[in-house]
Length: 230
Image (cartoon, rainbow, N blue to C red; front, side, top):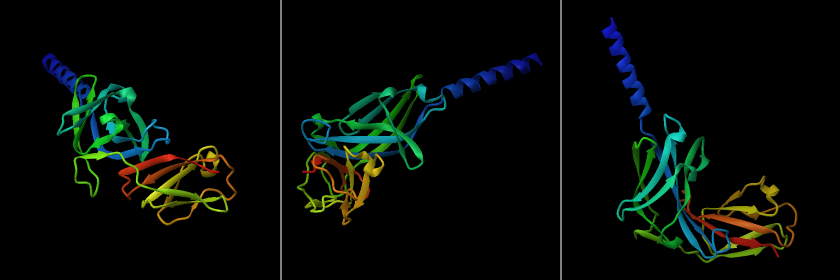
């Protein structure tokens, strides 16, 4: 009887130990390549960053996560973040963790191709997830920051702007000094929609923040310099 009790106790300890050492896991990684034009708030010059987010889970609690590494396979370049560096955001119905400013080449370009997202817990357990970063129609293994030509004009009614020369999928606008216009968020306009900012005339000095999504998948995003209503 005592032998059975000892065996049961040992098995219980093994079970508890194995549960405590379950590695964390990552799933559903998503990415964006984000270009910030000079004057959009990210820096004194135009810069581009890789933004990567993913669902992250650890059976021992989020506090058990030690660090996250993003590894570019072809070059072995590694970006490493501590748990407290991670951002949390909502995609659909799920909470995602990640970082929006993975920087390469002083923000002048982003490496395309195969990446590995690696999560490590406090016991040293690791989990990997593959991530392919690419852009449709872009054959090179690097994306260099650039801003397509565009033109913004204020309509005579001072309630609407025109955005020309730059083909896009959708445009998200926010009046920075009047955030209540869109419930303190951005309003998305698809290509061809009228860009009506307000039902009243906008006052001179109003600042409009512009996020341009170049395609439906929003893989490539531009934050343009703030437009001032004059």
